[in-house]
Length: 201
Image 1 (tube, one colour):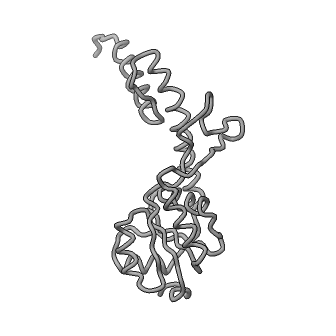
Image 2 (cartoon, helix red, strand yellow):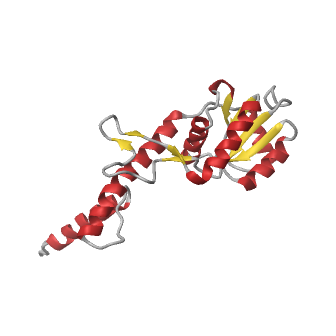
Image 3 (cartoon, one colour):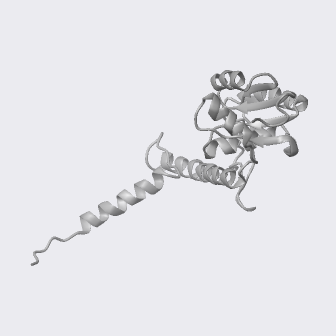
């Protein structure tokens, strides 16, 4: 059974506009479904000299801004949320989806008391109804995990890539995953080259 407020005006936020229409049909009257079109906030793209959008002196605190081409979506969500009795954040099930739910809540200034998080792994009517029957709060541990990943991406990408451009070749990039992978390959190659074959019984 759905929430007791199901017959009132409820707002649902998903990532994909294609999912929005299907989910709205499954939920029926009393539910308005809007799409965030993915991430609505991110670290700044345009940075001043020696800026990263991450305060490394204060626990690596990130500075977020609304993504330029998502301002319209944030405005629509904010406006609709003011009229809604409950707001359901139904972004994707993974870590990114959890972070998007949190960013939507922050960007739209959602009232935490009337905000719920729902997740589902398939777009079927039974799965949607089951998810809405068991809402929860945003999992901040997953949000923190995504933020840590994004911050490390920024610190690596924005500091190491320019160094590669100057020292090796323009257009190369360094990142959180590929840099470590290259190190493992290089270390292994050095072991191979340093190996001295000997006969033994």
